[in-house]
Length: 328
Image (cartoon, rainbow, N blue to C red; front, side, top):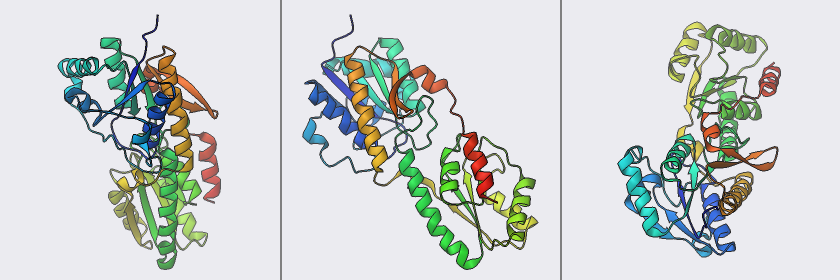
């Protein structure tokens, strides 16, 4: 018999992303709809260890659907990586009468949730919240769409000054292990070249591409670079290399950094968060556990947490081809 769920805990962990608040709201209100209690756990797994809990009702999540970040805060927890820390967290959940967990975050969050479930047979459901879109089992993670729109908006502004001064701009975006933001935003913003970890363009081909652009009459260029791209040690060394070999270029660097994580979530992310929150709570009530709710072919799906953690997301080869054609 599945465990009867009367009280659900919800937490956010790891890097914040736009849409996390909308997901918290969805979890809280779905619990209220099904007449069960919801407890907000502050500062992720560290808050679980410290018993930093707060009752959350439908009115406690008013006016947060449009806010970036997370009202539950987020924190890294070294203590949760120890058996003693996880035991303390479990004791706190039992003491508070919490029967199940919804964890919102990326692969680190899911790894913690899976380990916790395996040790204590405690029901856990995951909601993917990371702007990198690097979680297997979902076409979109929370915050990815918002981050794309933020990056495109900034590149549009950079292009204005690039055109005015006949400059080459290297724009570094987030994506340590995945180039989804760089590839999609690069195409959307009309970048001349896109550098991502999945495809090693090579320094010589980059120089060749920039020389072609110059010969074709392009007086300014935008190159979008994922932070995990392997072509150079960092974007500033890449700038120096290009200036040394193509002195006719006046090169500037813009590192967009954490501005990509902030801001009001897009409508897409708000709707996605609402759908994922409902599915997460209702799946727990059906006795399901150790799963991540995600979006596949515009349908809400369930993927085992282990697969979500270990599976590798693939870069869209057709988009790479489109990118090559658009840079002509």
